[in-house]
Every structure is written in structure tokens, then in C-alpha cells.
Image (tube, rainbow, N blue to C red):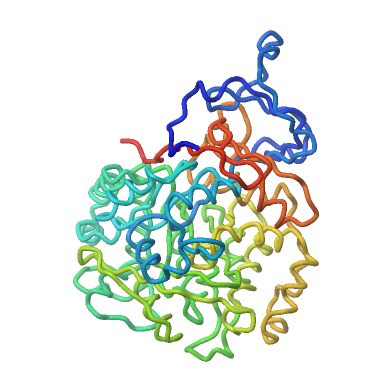
Length: 508
């Protein structure tokens, strides 16, 4: 196995995967038995009979073929991830690794059948080091979302009302920084943080100190700037009041503010809580009114940020949320300023089945998945590593696709959540095609990647072959074969080769 060799078209001769059971929702193929042809890193039309005779053949009969997985929202590089490794070194290596090394991250994603990942929150001043780390991340095409709306010049431009100037600044920041999109983490939160204004709940119409701005205005004007700048992915939003009881109301106001232009709301599980104040007994689900609005407003998309039980590390560009969590739990945490632009909060966390709040978080995420009508507007995520490691994706897929397994898991959690959660009354099960949508087709489409998430001619030859099994977690945990750009990179849980992958950056 060579370290991150670039791979060339010569590594990907004309090849046919024969007789696989194909799941390709973008082309309406739902369990259709057929062949997949690829060459030079791309999927191609079936060639002439003369060329077929010389092609390489791979036995696909009895195997399930899907496009390579696309992780729209993860945290894999940059200062916050490095801080996570420092604060929880016991979670860096081995089976418990919540913040694995860069090389191990690429290997683990590939062995899971994923071929594309985006880091969802990089400060603009950290873009250079994050890009170098992305270059070292093997077996994945990869990109990053930049926290452009934290920059003083951007905030000043938004306050001035000059939409053209804001669009220019945002576009320049993303393109010079080799980013893919703009992420907002708690609009205006960095300014409040620097002014030591760190109260609990914040309203979208609170005045941002030092600017003629509110969080709502930052959202509105940044969303328009991103659209005007022509970036491939829409504004990626982590709204205010993450993790606080009663925050579903803020999330609904955020949806209403953003509706009209495309916008993506990140890790909505952490923004969907009912209750008021800090009374844990009042804590609960606010999903129903959010889904009701979401289902009827198609310009919005979401990823869930599912919590799964076990040890992990919380890391966020929203230091206010991290500080609140640390004070509520007593867990040691760290925050580092990013050139005085704001902070990044990091702390270890253990999600427990019998914790009332943790059980609600688990149930609320699943409620989102199982309530949204259109899976094309929803993306599977754990906000890695905040809700769980990405290696937990197969377990999450089984929870979605196996009602009896989900009910057995529900029977183990805190009894108050079992009684009160709407999850107990939901019988929906995801089909394999729906699982393919939320892990591949939908995130590729939402991210603006027309060459990803499908198996049609012209797509990247990122292909995963699974052995079907009644236990979906077993099926999705260990693909039979994983091809990145037509190169076999993983097989039966073993990495066979490391290829460099491409940096996905918005072009000028």
C-alpha cells in the first residue's frame, strides 16, 4: 500500500462490474440487476462488443451496488480536531477512536464505503493549515466550509447593506481559501463571545454589539451573498441556541428567515428541543412543528446530527454552546481563540442510554429521520464526532431500516423518554433505496456535486459493493469492495490502496 499515490487513468482500465443489484435513486434504479462499466475514473456507457472482449471483469452477482458515500457534514481537519486529540488522547487510536489521525480517518471512511467528505466549519484564518491536512487525507475527495460570516470585514459589509460588496467578499474568501461553501455557526456569536456576552438563550433580533446588525439580518444577507457569489453549495447554517431547551422556536424562526432562497440547516437534532429554562423534566421534542414547516418549504434542506450512545468528543465553532454544556455537565473543556475572531469549544462527552437528556437527543434525531416526507431533502449525519463517530453510521442505518431493532433499542433508554417520545408511535422503515438517498444521492445533490451520488455515465467511478444481510449494521459496516475513481481502495474491511483524492474547492 503506497501513501496517497495520485492514481491515474492507467490505474482504471475499462472494467465491468457484472450482475450487481444496483441502487441508483438518481436514475430510478431500485434494486435493478445490471452491469456497471467504468474507465479512466468515470462511469461510462456500455462499450462496443469489440471493446468488451478486452475489459476487466468483476463479479457483482449477489452484491448490492451503490455510489460511494458522501458525508455532507463532518469535522475531520483543522484546529478544533487537533484540540480534540489533545483533550482526549485515549480516543485517537484503536476501536474507541473518536478523533482518529488524518490517515486513519481516510482509511476508516473508505473501509465504510464513503468516498467524499466535507469538513463543516473552518475559520478563514485556519484555511491554509486545513487545506494541507485535507491534502493528506487519503481515499476521499474532500472540501471545507469556511466561517466567512465571522470575519470583521464581512460583518461590516453586511451592516452597511451593500449586497454586491458582501457577495464579492464572501466569494473571494471562499475561493482564495480553497473552500467549497460558507458556514455560519451561531450568527453573530463570535462578536457576542468576544464581548463576554455569554447568556443562555439569544433571540434572532438581539443587537450584535458594535454593529448595526442582528443574527437574523446576518442570516438574510449572508444567504443572499452566497447565492449571488455563485457558490456550489447553499448557505450552511448552525443557528443560535444550540443545545438549549426550547430552541425549536428559534429553529422555526430561522427556517422562516431563510425560506425563499436555498439554505441548509445543520445538525437539526441539536436545535429541536422543547421545554423552557434548565428544568430537565420539561426537556423534550420540538420536532413536529419543525417538520410540518420543513415539509412544505422545499428550498430548505437539513442534516440530522444523530446522537448515538457511547464515548466521543464534542467540538464546535460555537464556544457559547460549548461553555454552556461544560457548565451544565462539569466536564473539563477547552476553548481557543482564532486570531480574535471567536472561539472553538472542545470537550469529551459520553452519551448514556439512561440519561434523560441523552435519551431525548437520541429519540429526537430518529424522529427527524422518520418524520420528514422527502428523503431527498435530508442527509444522514452524526455531526461527527459531536453526536457519534462516523463509524456508527451502519448502526444508524439499521435503526432507520429495521423497526424491530429500533423498538428493542427504545426499550433500553430512559423510561420517561420511552413514554413521551413520538418515536414510539412511528413504524416507518427506510428501504435500501432510501438509505442510498440520505447517504449518497441527496448529499451529493445538496452539496452541488453533479458527478457524485449516482451511477450514471459521467459520474465519478466511486462505487461500493455490499453483501446483503438481514442485519443492516453488519451489511453497511464492511463492504465487499470500494472503488475510488475506479481504483480498488478497500475490500472486506481492509484498505488495499491509498489514493490522494481531489480537493473540492469553488472555482474562480
